[in-house]
Structures are given as structure tokens and as C-alpha cells.
Amino acid sequence: MSSQDSTQRWLFRLREQARDIYRLASGLNEAQLSQRLEAGQWSLKELVCHLARVQQIFVARIEAMLTQDNPEIAVYEPDGDEEFERLVQRPLVETMTSLITERQRLLKRLESLEPADWERPGQHPEFPFFNVRFQVEYMVHHEAHHIYQMYQRRAWLAAPPR
Image 1 (cartoon, one colour):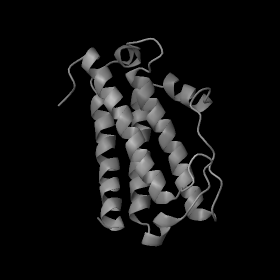
Image 2 (cartoon, rainbow, N blue to C red; image 1 turned 135 degrees about the vertical axis):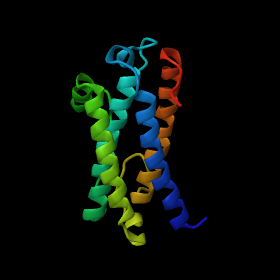
Image 3 (cartoon, helix red, strand yellow; image 1 turned 90 degrees about the vertical axis):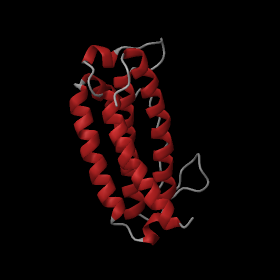
Image 4 (cartoon, one colour; image 1 turned 180 degrees about the vertical axis):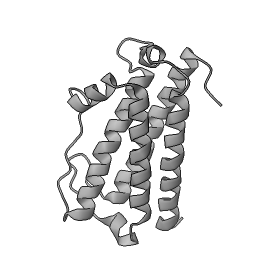
């Protein structure tokens, strides 16, 4: 498979996964969304807020790699992230609207990239090889993992939506 084919596959998945996030969080009230089904496990709302926050961070990383020469990329630690805590305090509909709007903006930006832009590097302390393509693929896999968790939570709260 060519790098162009894989790029298109990642963009397709980012688009579809945003729809999955929206679908799995829809039709429940704030109390249901905020309910932790097990101690120490995030609620459905917290999962959406985490994905919205990680999207902000990953977009900033991508932008840094596109506008700077080999920038240093900081490790993200969700524990103690004040912005995540602020997102959790907002009504989920606001966070979802923001996530979808920012996703559309990200997709438009990624679709405009030249092939060489996908190879622009950054220095990440946990990964010896890190570039725009890697960050986008990482985002897809990270998000898919949490969508599965959302699906599990949704199944306990109500039948997953169609």
C-alpha cells in the first residue's frame, strides 16, 4: 500500500471515528454520561473529554512539526491536566460541538498537505521516530481504543445507538 493510500485511510478513519464518538455519546443525559460504572474507570463523558483534549494536543503537535524544524514534542500526562478537568465540568454537548468543529478543521488542514509535509519530523522522548504521519496514525489508534471503551460503557447504560 502506498503512503498516499495509507494517508487517505487515516483521514477516513478520523472522520468516521468522530461520528462514532458523537453517536456513542448521544441520547443520554448528563447524569448517565457522567456515571462511572467502575471505580477508577472513566465515565463515558470523561472518555469524550479525554479525546477532545488529546485532539487539542495532537493538533498542536502537528502544527509545530509543520511550522518548525524538528520541534521538541512534550509527553502528555492526563493526570492533573487542568484543561481536561475544565472540559469535564462543561455540558457534554459543548465539548462534542467543539470536538467535531476542531476535527473538521484538522481534516481540512491534513487534506491540504503536500506529501513531503507528512514526513516533517518532531523529537518525542518516547518514540525514536516521530513525524506528522506517525502522529496522525497514533491518534487514530489511540482514539479507536477509547471508542471501544465508550461502546462498553454505553452497553451498560443503554443499548448502543444504531
